[in-house]
Image 1: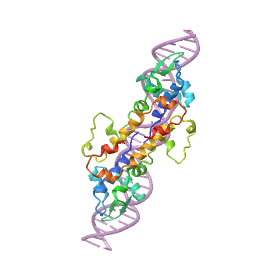
Image 2 (image 1 turned 45 degrees about the vertical axis):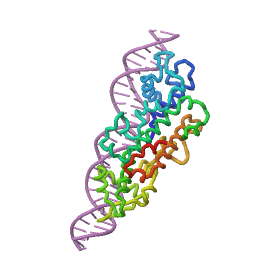
Image 3 (image 1 turned 60 degrees about the vertical axis):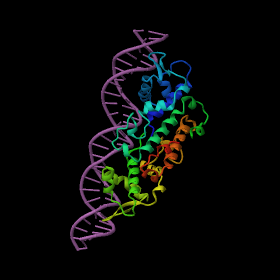
Image 4 (image 1 turned 135 degrees about the vertical axis):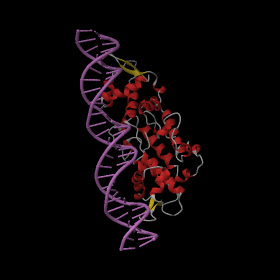
Length: 143
Length: 143
DNA sequence: TTTTATTCCTACTAAATTGATAGAAAATTA
DNA sequence: TAATTTTCTATCAATTTAGTAGGAATAAAA
């Protein structure tokens, strides 16, 4: 039950972009160096964010990436759902409809549904703006 | 970010044992058939629960497994932590101390700590007794 | 005592996922 | 035209997940 590096690196990348959010495009290499993450690996992560228009990109000299919105307009949930594929804790909750044959009499389904809601609500309640400040907001994260 | 079959099957196995909790030992094959899970695979899961004394086992004819405690005395959290290895959403929160070099200035650590607490509190608030009844308790699971 | 039923133990394996790496094409600016 | 940067396609090693196989040990019953 782990958040993969894809999701974790994506959040760090978004925080980095928010902390250097001065209107200019920021080359991926700068972020990779600051975050100590391989540029090549970061590339595969940033491409997902870019294709979904969470970021604006520009090729060539002077190019790079910048935020498409204000830091407070990105929830961590939206970033993780994109990069992790889904935040559902069990695969039967991934789609719109639950096509598991056991669903109608499953003893554990309500528990997983409750957990699923808990996860999504938690991460949808945190924005990138909440994370850029150096303050420790841990108390706020505990419901 | 998925709960593996090990954890999910373990919970189903415990529910099955609770639903057939009449003092007799229950052979693993019976559970495997009812739950439609391979007996051989269930074996590897039940051995963890048995070694940790969550279950009482008896070999030979008339043998099998039965609960060591009342269903209401097993939290889902204790079962999942055992079978999943840990419920920590990031590896740096697995041990007693966080030995990640980035920990002291990590922007995301408080968020993961809050999430970690949320997960453990949620599953520690649900017992096997809560799951054996056919009623839909989903509202209770939403905090 | 033999048979039967069961857990317990060790080892193995296929498939999927994770976490990358490599090389080059396309675009943009200077 | 040169330099810089994103974008695209392909590949790959390590790890985890999910499951299988065979047999030894144990206990009860016939």
